[in-house]
Image (tube, helix red, strand yellow):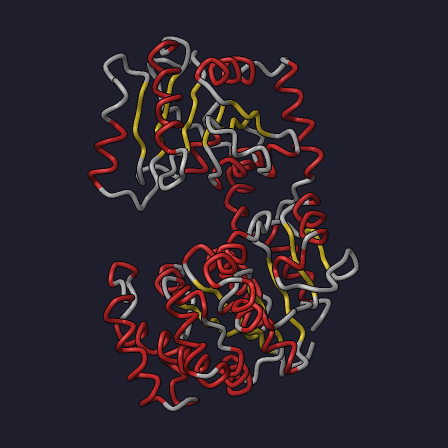
Length: 431
């Protein structure tokens, strides 16, 4: 390591910020210089975490700022979301700089066509990121997986000959890339955002399954040459808080008046095409077997009041075994104090499996057998109310065959803990 070492972290959105921020903070503790490029809602998340950051607006002098502002202002009129906690100016220059680069790189006709097809997902500001990296005198790049700014930073690092570290988000399922290809069409995709291939210096994964799966289908991420030599199972920084939960074992009894019954936590999700069928399945199971278990409805933070009312109205809480939790309880503490966690594809299912809590995937339309937790035998997949109740009943018994299957599935995935520490140690080997 030399005194000139400086690592640029790049994250788009609050979820990806939560992956990068813990690593940057730990690197700072180790006296390694960092800078954080926090885009859209990653900025407010960095503020909450007390980590200084910059965004595209801070580097507008690296481009024709008048053109960028003109382009960005037109887009921001429709795309700026003040609820994210970012300024209008930030949105203007994020949108304007990205569109300006696309116009310069692709030509105006193609740039505007893919913008109409895929919106901001069509952006890939490689040249701008190269200018930022050069101005900040950064020597290494740390980022996550996405087809946009994170990808642009990896491509920029590769073209500048810099080492880069990419932390995969859970299992790295390439839905964003697949969605882009569907929106743009194959030809347009490979003319635009898909025109670059990447090989990070090191790719970091949550578990063995995530790494092996990624390597087998890496072309879907526009990656090439990733193998066991240049990838590491480090664990996931977001899960450091789960390591703390496992260590402290918090006792937060959700149903103090019914402590002898299993507590089933429903990781509610909205927007999936089987949403109505999932709710109907759970409603039927709870109404017919409600004396057999306690049910917690863990709502997503972004639900609107009307949506909350609609869901809650389906479940009767008069007998004291139904409770709704929105943001008033740490979801990891809730999972720890649950007997079984059920849902569709929620991250909470992986959080539960990570800390040893059995998982059930509700799949009334039979579209979820390819989910990683299902493929590895970690999650029990059910398609009707009777199957759901049987799974809850048997997974509540540690000696049952189905519970032993869950434990074996967990072992097969080989989750790795202490993600932040492991990633920082890995980075130190390269600086």
